Image (cartoon, rainbow, N blue to C red; front, side, top):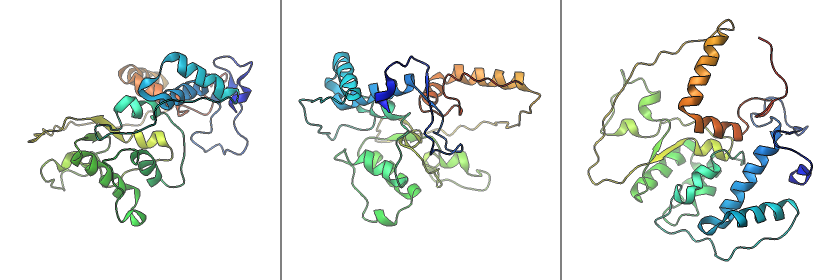
Length: 256
């Protein structure tokens, strides 16, 4: 597909693969800008911390022209490395790479780190179970991190009693990712390892309401506010092809 980039300009759409159904979340036309960004990230991943812009650009050129590229060092992860080392998570958070089973995203990602061990009962574990084990191993190996969906977020706190710090643990029911980027989006920020951690549980009331078709001005106001507040998340969603079936720069518009 990248061999067809010749003659394309930024913003040009490449036709969707005919075998992809309309319901496929990543089936939207992919712009040349998105493809080049993905290839740039692949080049950065290939050279790791020894990369330069010239190396990455040479990698992109040879990739598209079916050339050959080499790197001097062998990839060896140390016990100090984790998902945040060399911006690994950030580089792949918009990735649409898919696997046969959602558990594969954890195994394919974490086996590069020497401190991660495959659970003995891996063949019997569902994704949520493996995700909990992954979170526990990160904490025990002094690489603690936060999770996007915690138990207190999706539980009825009025009818459930949590143990100490349990409210910050991953939800007992994690959504199964359909792509590598979706798995990384279940992970939050890295936290500092502490001997005697203290947490403060703060709650706030959130009103959820439906915006009807006649409230389009309010819709745009809410979307604009969300983009300004979390612009990086929206950018990642755009690069991952998650913002509509017409791509990130659609030529077609809708009449309201």
